[in-house]
Length: 622
Image 1: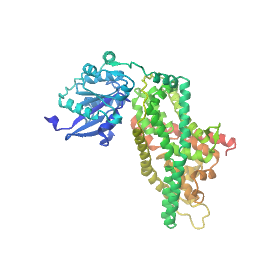
Image 2: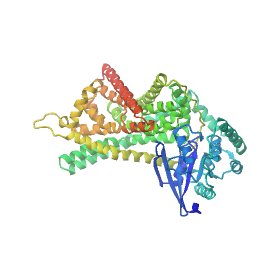
Image 3: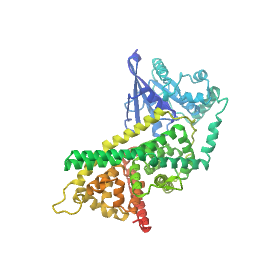
Image 4: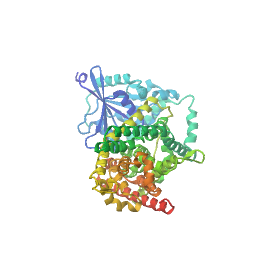
């Protein structure tokens, strides 16, 4: 009777990449909250469904292959199912989520979950793809073999959602009290037995297509070729970075035109003075110099989302596994490193999928070297200032080539540092990486657009939450105190910002940095792209006449080519992101590794900038 009035707790459990999170979103929509589990760094996602006057609480647990947990994510999933987490009660129902096109691995997990003794429902997700590829699943026999009700779902199109909720409620109504201490961790022999049983069920209930999908095999024979596959992957990356410049130019020009018009309108409406300086030179010039890079960032994410939805990212992981193995990285490190291309913070958090602690620490230490989206404004600005916008080889944009080279430099530096760490400090063998290729599928347009909007919103929120306040601080430091009477130098040289820059300039002079660049680096520690806004603010105050044009033109007039290239080299390595350092501190539960990262990344940044500047000067770029 009590079950009819209290809320039902449902735990979504499944292998990674089974569509579990998509199913969670389809079930709960906007009614969800994200936090961390008490005492651990693993993210906790909970959503709510209101159905027939009763609330269902849905917990999206981290992906796992077994309850014999070996990584932090898998430990949280196991403990959440067993009710061992502080402040957490065990779920009333376990909703196992399976990729219908790839049941082999999840069947063993389902057999392990049955031993927990909780009511369970199996959601066969991506069922439309299984049908389209001709895979034949005997649902009645599979249900009988497993002893759990089965519901077929297509999460991206919200098919089977109502049936799944009904099955969960029916299972909850028949739930028996859990027996404390009735579950024991499976040993190696028990796992082998469950794997053999899962294989038997697989052969009995799932038959391959009568007409096998030979197209996938033919495509994979090209995409997964040891040499040809790497050439294709390089070509895909090359096209991506060419598009970042070529496609984004009209939109970026449009945003820049709007910001210029807005600045002129505000300047005409507000008399000369401190308020006009704050709004035009501080806010519009500073924040606007970052907003113009939104089109480039969205184009980059469009490629990443499309490639992931097509199923190509798993192929890229397979191709790069050998290379990462040579560098001493585990195959699973590909996912955190790929995530770091978007942002190092989710990349560092994604290392939880790596079982071995040393492999995980190595990946955490090198993840920030991958070129994240926050570097795009810096790279784009310097490239536009110093690299001609011209075509080379008859088809390639030179600026796009340089951007591609910077991304390659990030990958090479991450692999090189990982190699050094494993050779000098942790001389242990890298565990083999096993994975199954997902089926190719067409991306869902609505999902792609939603993800793009999400990225745009995050970027704009970051601009409002971090960049805007910092630009007010930079403007204030660049404006006060006012120059004394009779002063002949630009006003900023008498300001607090000028004092700070001049004080630190001797430290950075050997790598070709002037004091304005030093001023930009300080607030740039909050977020890399803030340096661009800071440069816009500093140069707008220092030389208002030249700042009326494009910031890139201003920098080209004030910096040498050697200085610009040294600034790019600095940003390949420097840990200019306090938020990332904080996440490293949290994920490693130690300040030691955060300071190790700060020391080696700043050291590499200084050495790389020094070498780049000196070589460029020697070649006539000074």
